[in-house]
Length: 90
Image (cartoon, rainbow, N blue to C red; front, side, top):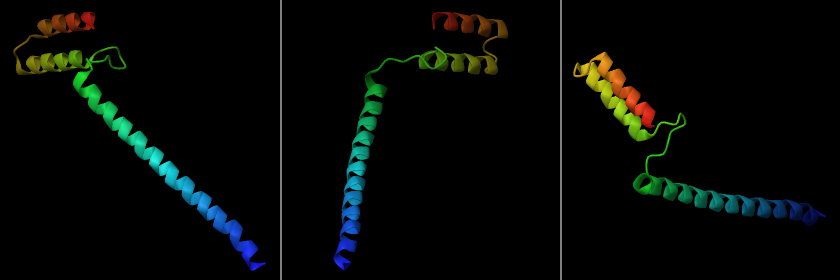
């Protein structure tokens, strides 16, 4: 009678341990896939549009224009004109 009690517990421990190990291995594989995907996009992929439809390159150019305006190199009118050109091409 004592052995009958232990066997279901032992079986549950084996099944649970196996499921844990399998899940851990699956997650490690997914993490490796995600790392490979992130690395390949940075090197070979062109600038993809962001959620608002503006590419990363356009955002960088807008930041540079903003810096030039803050430094006094561009006037507000020049900044607005260049910004409109960038946004129309995006």
